[in-house]
Length: 371
Ligand SMILES: Cc1cc2nc3c(=O)[nH]c(=O)nc-3n(C[C@H](O)[C@H](O)[C@H](O)COP(=O)(O)OP(=O)(O)OC[C@H]3O[C@@H](n4cnc5c(N)ncnc54)[C@H](O)[C@@H]3O)c2cc1C
Image (cartoon, rainbow, N blue to C red; front, side):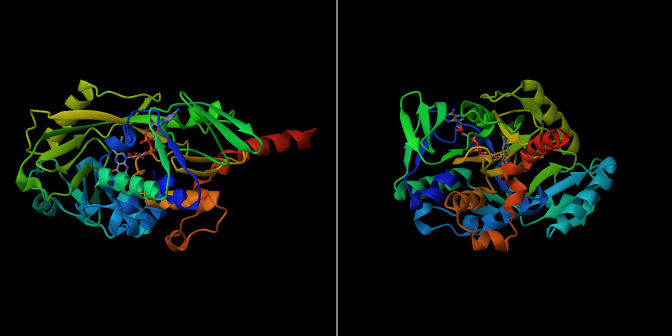
């Protein structure tokens, strides 16, 4: 939707979605946090560049602000302190205003943390909750305002080149266009195969989230994340949203929660806190899809003019979406890098699909050279 919103003012855009509603897959299943300084070298600048849109989107696109205060608190037991310090160092290098704190300060921030468990914390007050539905709707409003057409129940089943452009076949339709944007999330490589394009090697990873009864006193807590990613939890209205923070490989699919993952998350959270969780209100699983180097993949396929990738958003695809929509649109329109992206030090080479093609070209060149 971000790509459609950024492209719609400049041409004729059709967005095709295989499900009967938008954001049914990963986008509707996220933990909805903005944490700028702890991603990969491609995603940190994109998150930084997205901040201005998230803080101040065009008035007509939203009903309520997209961001609200949250903060993030990484916690470690005695075995995690060394990694917590390394993590703090990484954050400082990319400009994080976070600070290492002791068990007393951790308890002040989140009184339910178990004093026998916590050896230290790293607190970043700048993290924000994102209203994901509101952000998605903001992109829908921009796209529609500029005439983009959105077709649901439209699964892409064929993609071929014709007269320098593309023919996209869906279950019900045929669309001819100059440019195709492959923003199919976990199915990104499948779309490439339909077009006869070499896949990137995307890998989807399951992550399960569930809600449990909370309390209004918890509302001001930051999100609490175990530094080894053994669990996380955060207030979500009057509930707590919890996760095992697992990364289990999966094929592209509509993943369902596994009870053993939820049980293990509850066991770990109950060990680390005094929350004594016993009831689950709701649960879901989403797929976080990564390129082999875990950076986003944004840009034109070197081997297929007019085929643009927008995949591999992993666990950062909400907070970086305003910037990557803008980056992708500038590439399709053959424009220079927009100023707000340059100011945030976005480097298109880091996220270009060309990085996966050099090796192959190199191999071919080496083979030719050796003959
Ligand atoms: C548990 C969890 C927590 C997360 N927390 C955060 C967070 O705190 N902050 C953050 O920034 N990010 C977070 N993320 C990551 C974020 O949700 C994703 O990076 C982002 O939603 C990816 O968006 P997408 O549009 O690429 O994928 P999707 O939302 O999956 O969209 C891809 C779409 O393509 C459609 N499609 C696929 N194949 C076809 C076809 N053949 N024809 C037509 N349509 C097709 C699918 O139906 C789907 O709607 C989290 C993810 C999970 C699972």
